[in-house]
Amino acid sequence: MASGKIRLVHLYPDLMSVYGDRGNVLTLWRRAEWRGIELEVKELTLGDTLDPAEADVIFFGGGQDREQAVVSPDFLRQKGEAVREAVEDGAALLSVCGGYQLLGQSYTTVEGQELPGAGLFDVRSVPGPQRHIGNVLIETDLDGQRRTLVGFENHSGRTFLGPGVRPLGRTVVGAGNNGEDGTEGAVIKTAIGCYLHGSLLPKNPWLADRLLAAALRHRLREPVTLEPLDDRLEEEAHQAVAARIRGAGGRVKSGAW
Ligand code: GLN
Image (cartoon, rainbow, N blue to C red; front, side, top):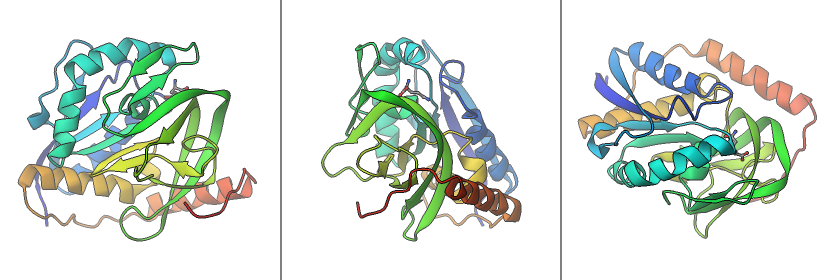
């Protein structure tokens, strides 16, 4: 079974972390530790430079427009290119909401300021007339089988996917990318962008393991199999949240994407 040491780069934890986003980092760290894998966390903020070789997995959380405007020039100047290189080289990435928006082509704030993005995902985000706040349930076939993800969204930005961009999944309840086309998030290689706060990973443990496995594979440069964990509690949490979301009678959509 896989063991070793991996490095996680947490982007702007002081500015871009809302609605439990940091819990994703803790989850990755804990699930690695339970398997005897050391996960070293490096926090990068304004003024820091990202060396693409030092990241096996990158986390970029959400934030408000004001923080995004502060972060955006620094991100483009000192980190965006390196993030793209790291992902190209097989590093894993999870980005949520504001972080996801800044990894797209551009994000326009409610006040009309266009913030250029790093262009990792071919998506554009524009302000919408209403704020989408609430629990989200999506279906995804990310790892070849149909699974559900549960999370919490709070955004006014609407994200539209460029041609050929693979969404993370299809919304069952919630607005997702834009409240119109039924898509949620975007995926490129082992990088994920999404609107799922919450924290996302504690109650969707298979996604945490997918990121961990990719990070370890990036580090070791060989195929890896993670030791299974006893996820009964996590599964119960997932099922309970999913049932509550479905039961709450949120907007339910169907159809193909
Ligand atoms: N400011 C962005 C929006 O409202 C992102 C919000 C967030 O990260 N929760 O769309």
